[in-house]
Amino acid sequence: MNSKFIVSWFIVAVVILGGLWYVGKNNVSVTSLATTPDQSSQLVTDFVLYDFGTISMRDGLVKKEFLLTNSTESEVTLTGLYTSCMCTAANVVQIDGEKIGPFGMQGMDSFAPRLREALAPGESRSIEVVYNPNAHGPAGVGPVDRFVTVQDSTGVSVFEIKAMVTP
Image (tube, rainbow, N blue to C red; front, side, top):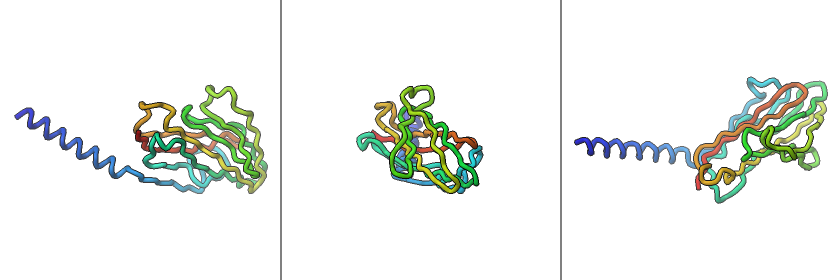
């Protein structure tokens, strides 16, 4: 009787995990907010969270751009950009399309350029976030939650990316 109980629980666990995997498969979602909540920056952003859904290690890098807009009546200067993990990089995309970066994990990226990007009132810049699902090797399979922090002369903005990494 004890072995039947264990087998039954194993089957239930497999069905539940399979159902969760199926529901989360390729489920891309975006959270849109007018401003960055619980953050100190005066810059306005289009999104603070982007979920890539299910991504495969064999497909390589994935990218998402977040738009920052200076809604103040004064110039705001971007002074710092860093990520929460070395598997994630970020670039500032200038008006002409040129990129400043890449910037990585704070304290781990000694070759990052100095950031002093001024935004006039009403001006915008994109922050390109690049996630490498292969950075952690086979141990990197599963849910991923990474953050990108932008420091500016008025405070801080934080962006979040999520994904479910498969082999």
